[in-house]
Amino acid sequence: MGVPLLDLKAHHEPLHQEIMAAIEQTFRSQTFILGPEVGKLEEQIAAYCQAKYGIGVTSGTDALLIALMALGVGPGDEVITTPYSFFATAGAVVRLGAKPVLVDIDPRTFNLDPGKIEKAITQRTKALIPVHLYGQSADMGPILDLAHRRQLAVIEDAAQAIGTEYTDGRRVGSIGTIGCFSFFPSKNLGCLGDGGMVVTNDPDQAERIRVLRVHGSKPKYYHKLIGGNFRLDTIQAAVLNVKLKYLDQWTQRRQENADCYKQLFQQSGLIQKGKVQLPEAVYRISGVKHYHIYNQFV
Image (tube, rainbow, N blue to C red; front, side):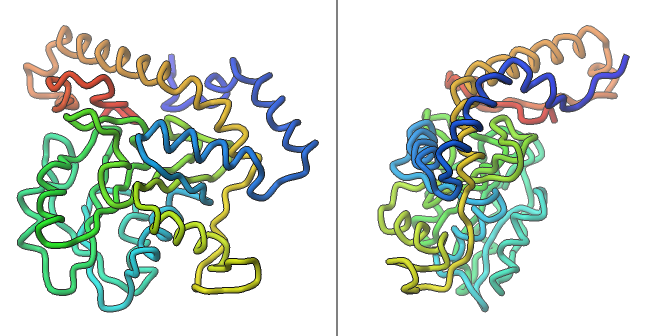
């Protein structure tokens, strides 16, 4: 019996009618670019992540890129991040002519080790990018303390962690300066192609990101900044608005499945023999509901 790592057909089948109705409504409205569904999604994702502002963008990669652009990262700057992440995390830094400085991870969580960051800070350091890998938050308390003390921005790469909570109940993306999410189909909340979201509590950063999203123009055809085409398609937002209603239900199922796997591995004796090392949900003891959302069981 083969069990696929991801079965999108099975995932979408119960939602087929709702999704097709949302697509049909978008087609009838003919508002394919920054239509009302985008604004609705921005409000809902911001609220879900406990942030004040949400800005829909083309992908998780572009979410990172536009966040760095909004912070003014450029040639000569350094950005501290983890070597254990998808290429886009460091790649977005390099695209702006800056240098990614890689700091090792905590082997329990695979996330950036806060105790190793300060030694990597130089006069050129502009920002930190912790990644909430596999659905578990990086240790944001000491990271934020260090960032505040050294006056550094914090961009959260939460591509795999929408809804994840830190020990104090804050949801990732709303903890640092700017949070970045991906809606790639394999994510816990995925669209039917590429899509992303930036969230922040800073009104100035939110406004700057919105301007950068449309080639830096405000009003239209008057370009104050050098931006890009980073707009989220209305049709993708419409699909995500359907799926967002079910996200907490899916997260609970993922947590239940993870507990089942752990129990079965314990019973198998493979852990005791040292042949299997299970993921460690380090924040479960804190009592928060979404201590780990298990984008992957790693």
